[in-house]
Length: 371
Image 1 (cartoon, rainbow, N blue to C red):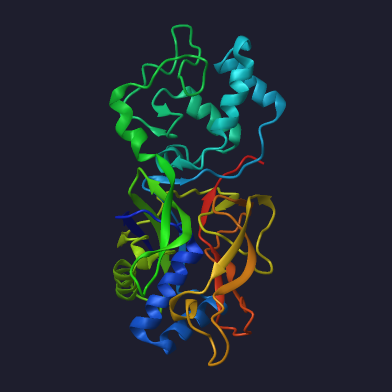
Image 2: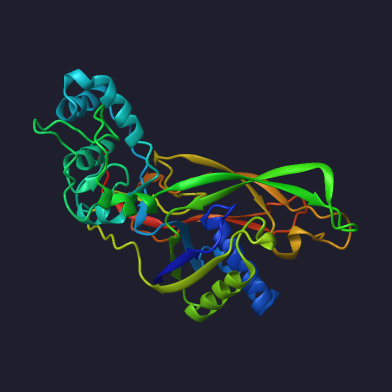
């Protein structure tokens, strides 16, 4: 399979996360409207037969990958980290800082690349982020040069983000911090009377918009024989024109997608595990021994199924059955170098149409995990 990178640039706020199953669903509907029903059926059949024409990941902020789910740091190793970087007098501060660092959602791809052949663990990443003066713990990425405020003269952590120090970050790094900002804003709306053109009394409601400091996201995909870069490019252009996700008819989810050659850039010769970069539903025989978070997905139908009855009778039924999936970032122990983990789940709707499916194929990233 050929590897490509989809670059997504935001031109508005979004209400729907860039999950692999949602991106795949948008591509399916674009394929249906551009090439017809037969083309979509053939595309879905390839996935059901275990030979998918397209494997796609979640989209992440430019230059980042999900922080892997790994075994928790034990008391002994946690205390050793605190004694080394915060000293005994700042034990409580050290515990709080470690908890905050372990909650970071993304880790710079550059950190993975520079240390790709080493066995990874939570204590490995924490030690790396804290020890390297060029890595900023706020953005989990390399800075252009060493941060002068990360340590004091005695070698103790002095960064105001992870210590009791009041040191502020140097102004020259503000651009990097802005790129990592994620803000949720509540927007108020009123319903409109379509006859009078005025608002309806007591009709106030809100939506939660997501704004990202980093306006560029990256998703990775693999294209199999039988699909083509040209078809995928046309599907992405269709999504550019019609929008992405919830409330796209009101201007939300306005994005610009382009595609180029590329992959995560991490190649490990002695891997013993993989991290999924997409939301994942294992098929029979797939590895499930590992470290993971689960996501309860309440999917919705897209295209004209979102607002019209699937059959000629009845009312619109846009909601799929709930589905439990492994989140992107989950790690599974496996020495096999397979590109095809996971499956699509058919029959995801109350109307027993097998063609109504949900994407759950993993985009595996090989890792060497300390077990």
